[in-house]
Amino acid sequence: MTMNNDTVSKNKRNFVDFILENEALRIQGPYRLKSGRQSPYFVNTGDFSDGVGLDELGRFYATALIEENVEFDSLYGPPDKGTALSIATAMRIGRQATKSVGYLYNRTKPKDYGDAKEDQAKRFIVGHVPQNGERVMMIDDVFTTGDTKNDAITFLKGLADVEISGLIIAVDRQEVNKDNEDAIQKFEDNTGIRVYSVADAVSIMRVLEEEENPVADEMRKYLQEWGTEKAKQLL
Image (tube, rainbow, N blue to C red):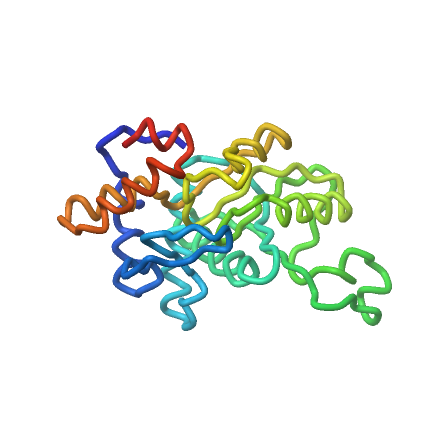
């Protein structure tokens, strides 16, 4: 995804406002991340725990995908948060783009009765059963090391000879991993699968700057230290 140094798309701006208002974006840090870093902000889409919030979240995902004009036949949500995201976004795409896309997610344990006896894929998934040649978009909340995404690709390829259209996440933190690598870029290079995001760290910082929120300065310092080269070029 590309973005000018000082512009933020309408969908990104509205999404940042949405997660701020609903406290899914928290800026009263610092917050200790799994990496051990102290971050001035933290995002948790799991805080949307009712139908209205989840519907709105799906709308932002759907709008981002529609604006990217990426083609796919179904949405796969890896456990755990991807499950609800796949359903909410598929429903929103149906309303916003008048296009029907399937959704699928993992069963907690294999099904060994009913239609699963005739269709092996139904032993492992709920929802749409992808067929050979279909295009599947993966959907999740965050991207950390990419390990779970690689597992998801292996799982999908085990169901059918599908094409992975991409992966969409809520927020790209635009920072390097413990090995000083751009984890998303590495994933894209290794798999050939593009990663899309509804918003990213720089767009969050821009919105906070416009609102004259002092956390924007903390985010800039954080990205100067831990940001990817692409992110630093946008500062």
